[in-house]
Image 1 (cartoon, rainbow over the protein chains, first blue to last red):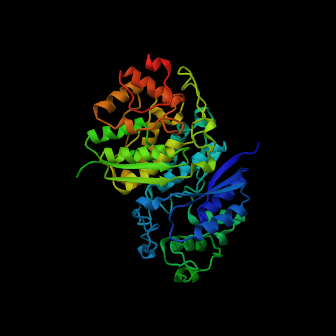
Image 2 (cartoon, chains in turn red, orange):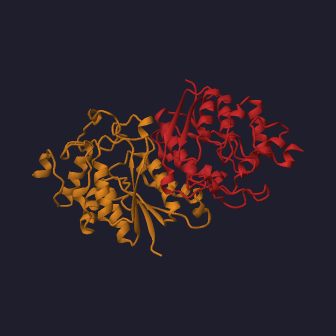
Length: 234
Length: 234
């Protein structure tokens, strides 16, 4: 029987590349995405395209109303709450885009899905390099989550724990992009911008990290931007 | 500033008593309940009554569509899936009422809530005595969850972890009932039956455990039952 993996697909670049890594490792992909009060619907449109591109066996989209108790700017009604930083300031503090316990909520729903289909693994695109200030993107967090998951589930208790795989955990964005290009992941169909315009804004933290990654990977980002920083085009 | 606790209120007896223990310990109570595809609405009606009785500061009811990936008889469209057992058989195997990763999903949403209001603790009515076969009701599970939560959150990373409190973990049902009676918890407004009739069925595993608890506590269950086992009335 083929190995099964639940893959968390946010519509962003990291989770897209992660799904293609899972596929490359021989897993059948069971995609899961969340409608959790994001500012815009771009991510979910992208997650659909990515799930199709990776040949997912199934794609579950779950409603989780995190807005009920969140002050994060990612969930705020007004996009004006997104605060731009210079590249040097990104990641030093826990940013206003932090959603309380988001990865814990998403991994836990993925765990319920994984247990119900008796999956072997859960793949998550968590990254500790660019998001070092997010507590739930650190290696120690993924490690503690694995320990908890091992005792949380029926199949874990029966000696067949579900492996939490975060293959991008320690990779810089440029490496992630290189892997994505090598695996022919549809990077043009991934959305990273914190704003939800027609094109990516090119100014928010997430756009800057992405453009810097492409620059360092010596590749051109296929995503159209409203604005390009000087250092990207020069 | 008063201590704050998020309390998971299912509408059952255990979570009701747990909320009253939290209140007794001086916490302001922030109740959270879930609409997750239960067979019947009794639990949520009861959770409303319990939240009011305990004087909760707020009561969040969250939709989580666990039905999307569950085969549990608690979530099945047909109530016929509930299988009754004799008292001696209860708890030996993981029962058909097990919902994959349920406590993990619920605790994780409670963690998001707790972090957003900067709560000091989360109270859960998990019990390892009656539900020894449920992996996510065991002490080692609660312990592993605590370790994970300590590194998962922003306030945890800042040195103020949220404590996971499961005060009933090792108590037999009769003790839980005695505590509930002592704290004047509204046990008549708690629903334990796996079936959702006008009265409790008196035949399912959950009714049997509850009636046995009252019998051993030498108290009368204020809940009306359709049927009473001989050993309860004698």
